[in-house]
Image (cartoon, rainbow, N blue to C red; front, side):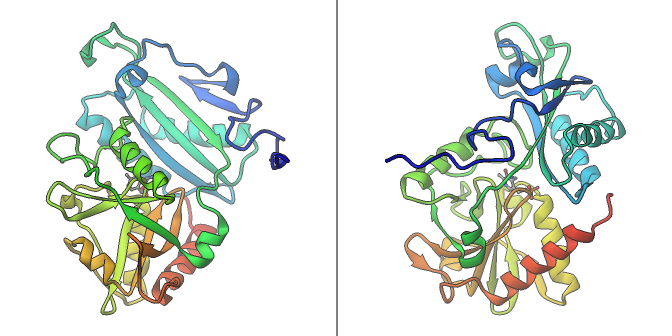
Length: 307
Ligand code: PMP
């Protein structure tokens, strides 16, 4: 017998967009089923665009300005001029949350190259398309936060920074998707990616940290990783707690032999890793520093002022 679909707030299948949600679309709030981009939009045709994944907690958007600054930095690197200011997009984000009555939400803000002729020349596209989706999110099941998750290492390596710099949060996620497919086939929800030199880079949608000899380590930006906003928040929380923190090149063996390991991301927050490539990390349970930082992160998001 098939299981009934779990009810959501809107009685929708959980992996379907909520139709009565309003989407901010180039300046207007429109119902989700009318928020549509053209088939000639280069965001769709070529993955030519940039985006941010942002979180709101208790009606406050966490690090909104920081996210928008990263969006503008990504756009600059692909020579895309966003037709709004940071303030305008901050106001639009808050207006979208308010219109949807959402205090706790995941926000997806996208700017595509816009509509243009076929052919990749971005300079023939005059009007970028900007939209903001707000929805509920649960990336990983609670039991993985309580007991940790197991990951595998992908054969697919992270994009070479001289090809498509992972610091650009672009709408072209195929590199990560290929690695994710490998992980899913191996029964894992998240997958570690190495860089072109065989060093540890990041997971498909999260940054990675290890604890080794009492130090907290994460790969440096030059390893070819996104400068995760959660990564930076966690680095700050660890320093505040008096933990020695280092951005250091690491190889897979360092993760295999780590005392603790965890991942960070806007959607994931802080999630313990207890196994990698069929090997147990540390004791096979979420480690004490991981748990301390996870709790500190929850306290931070509960009280954080908007920036
Ligand atoms: N790396 C990649 C590839 C990501 O897509 C993300 C965001 N999902 C992260 C790291 C984490 O970044 P942030 O903490 O800013 O969400």
